[in-house]
Image: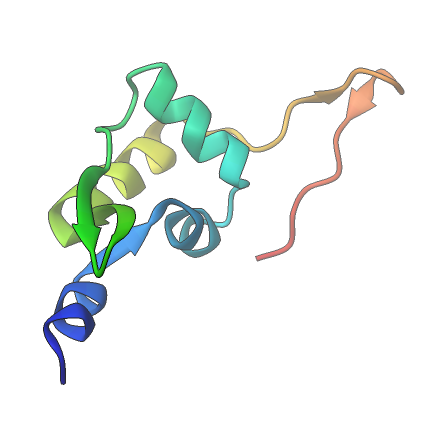
Length: 87
């Protein structure tokens, strides 16, 4: 197991977090932008910029989702609730 594999096992990228949480990537980015969840840690691994959260941060993000996220809002085109994403 390499150092990268160890880091990978304990962290979640923005897209991985979105998939695990069952929300869209844009939703996670919006939560970060609005200050609802912490910004991901930024590091360079093998010359690549990597943004990720650890297990502690993911616990906080899951808690935020459970307390504040109500699912998709209104479909502005149709005036009805947007389709819910299946987990």
